[in-house]
Length: 587
Image (cartoon, rainbow, N blue to C red; front, side, top):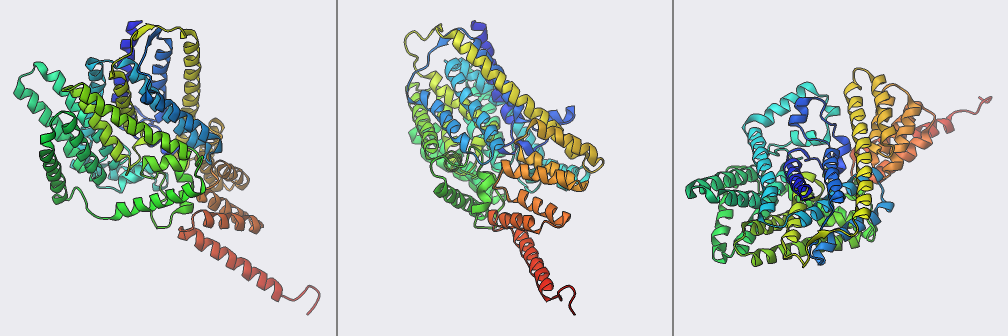
């Protein structure tokens, strides 16, 4: 079965290649992003995250059917990912948004699987080089996309969207990209691209260094300079200050763990020059707008933690409840922009502690590995990438973007796999039958969830495309979507919108009420329901309840406050006219 091990290594390299290129959508937004419809769109645009689930599911099946038992070191780092996943499962029953939590849990489960797969199969530098190769080719293509955006691609995309799409039907992912002058490559937005570059830069350069051993020294240096310069240039073009800070930390870790502490001053000077150059060119801004927004997000997160300290509100649910707590006029963010804070708001204090310990211990073990394998480019690159990932996670949401999170968990698993193995490392597993059965069941669950989710996404996409030209067909497609994903509040809300368009108010009410039931803190659903009650007439009490709830759940939304005030004034005027009118039968 050694050939199966080779296939598994090929699979890990494939994940490292596909994830940053095609899985750039945050997991809590994946329901709102339509899947590609044509071959060209599949080539150019992001893929549904469910495709990545299926890819990992194939790897899970291979792991389950491999009779060999390759024991990794049973230390703290080996146990922490499993414990982390347990904390997410424990937080699931109390979620306020089942669909978002289910999608997030599957995504995090794939992260943990990739850790253990890398820990089992990446056992030497040659194995690490295969994963690095996948990252290297992906990084080159991601950078090419980013440079195309910088040289006119952003404006061309804006023109294409404005000419071919109804603004009301533009996905949140696309809308976010259209409002920025910064490159984002194949990821959801510029800071996510910066996070990927920070994670991948060290491994990519290590791969070139190792592969170029037999090259002429000048050729190898040129290759390193070109690829390193390209990735750093793209990092600067993202305009991400957090990315630059994480890059600086990664460089320092690489210098120190590579046994060159005397180079620290020079490394700091180089990073400083890159930052100053980007600022002078106008690519890196020193304004406070993004910092102010993050402070609002973090303040809201702390308020949520005060109200839900132990179990949180459910994995991936910050966006469902944040509007109730935000104090500024910032956007209704779906993520905290801090992996660690969001872990506490979503899954509680124990999950936060385990998650923080996972990356503290992982970084510690990566530094120890680099020290033990002095001069090993792979070990140094892994330590640098994990240091940059951890720092960038303090100001962004890399954990929830598969294109960034999956490569990071692969690197973390490689730390475990490259440790000195225990005696009797490889032999046939005594529990093969049980493991195989459990693996097959797990794969069946993944295929079932992915298949239904993909089918629902295609039906939802059909509904969006036909809403303007054939609303009856759109309504039929929407019904299929909610039948396949009955707990998806976004789909229910969209069906409600189409039903209102057709003046089928009873169906609109049913779907808006279903959306509220599955995402009760989302103020926009209650506002939509209130408008349906008002359009029908004779439902002032129900409409008032929903408008008051919307204003309470999103107190900084001027629209909700204005419509509530107008509604209450109309009710008072109606009552006043009724009291002032003469009784029936009297003058």
